[in-house]
Image (cartoon, rainbow, N blue to C red; front, side):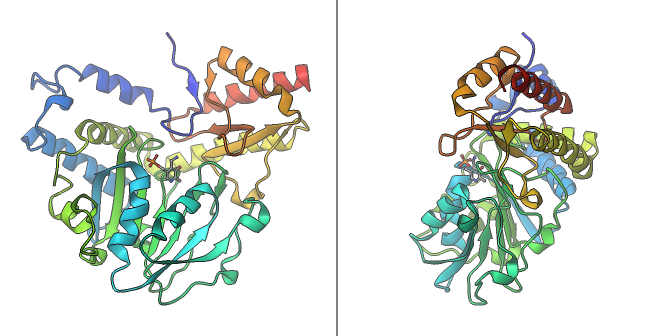
Length: 360
Ligand code: PMP
């Protein structure tokens, strides 16, 4: 069986080299006679795997010692609660930017714990554009400012990092982490579910400035308390060991590819090709303002919705999988994370051109 080009938004494609390495080490990790899955998380071997993964991530993303890196569980969604519980502290409110479905979920969860000020919303533009920061109603008194740099479903991506002054900036980087360089020092907290650019689902990486630790409300569940997780090197309980190991393999692979700068060049090229093709066609369309088009998730519609089924069937037959758009928006969506080879985008464009010619 040959590998398909999987355009799923997540869990998404992993680099083939990583899967092959995991396969070759599956039964016997480097002469230990066991799989990483079977190792004690307290063993020297696993601690080395865990530490190496963290070191490589720090190197790739440029994370200084001012930050703790946590390998947590419960996906990015669990962070929607952990963030207010840990960061509200004595404050009563937090600022949130609403750019789509994932921001809204974060907002809904935060409302359980405090006042949420929605300081800007992309709703007026039909979630096709991001309001200029000069129009945001941020408050210097907010516990933090939360935003979603890339909306995975809508395909809306910030092309700037908001200025938040002394208010800690919090970002849900789930679908864009490691896809291009980012100045981590501008952030108080970054979190990302793993299943797009890092590894298997369930794992969530949290990067938190150390001065923000230790402010959790007393009712915060122990497993959600960043200070506890940091003090225990993310091993307060049994961590998601195999996912952590796979994340480490992905980080090594990224380093071999030339790191995030090389990824940015590749990702920008892949996205541009697809957007240029869509814009040049009168059969396909993408509604997002050019500036804010996502490099990772590219939704598009066909001129006739009635052809969606035939489009997907033909795509499947060619090994171009999971192009169906999210159920809330319909149409198509091509997710092209780091592990999607440029050849996958080329194959998609070729198929789209042929389909439009035949059916358009
Ligand atoms: N935030 C964003 C931007 C996402 O894309 C996703 C998942 N698609 C989530 C949060 C939720 O992640 P999880 O399913 O890991 O909880």
